[in-house]
Length: 243
Image (cartoon, rainbow, N blue to C red; front, side, top):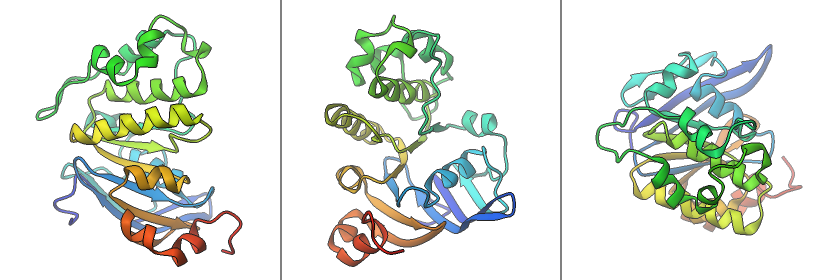
């Protein structure tokens, strides 16, 4: 897949926090109906990569195109209106509003070529939310709040979603439901960039992976190739391995 044919293309992404350089020329692409996984240990630069793409952090250098439009340095709300969704690791749901009210806040117009997301469709995708539609979001479990964060983003009818560590800290049962939802999104033709530390979760869902270590893309290829590369997994992903 080339930058010209990809739904999302990131080239030479370089980002600083103050004088500290965090990202060193990250490049990747993601197409419609594809799951691209950004793998790496905690602090490797996965979240900064996503924040740079969605506009929460301004890159110092690099090109980002989404649906053929250059978006590097654009304001986050303008990027979101183009159909690029973002679910941060910290979720950021509105705790004082109900599930239904949270979903309503995320509503955007349908996009050509994609079936519009409605509360009814999202309740079918996330049955836990259907049972809690009138409950305050702040009274829900962490796993249910993660589902709500994803569902609210889908109400914006995105063409591609950035998911930052969606399985982090969740029970095995909720992780299974999250995996099923991601598979369903892929079948709908939604592109997904998934930041993960959980290699098993990533291998179940991903098509391709980019491994990030100390802000650099150190490995790229299919998940099948990564599963067969013991050296890369041990060097870049094993907890406690030498860096």
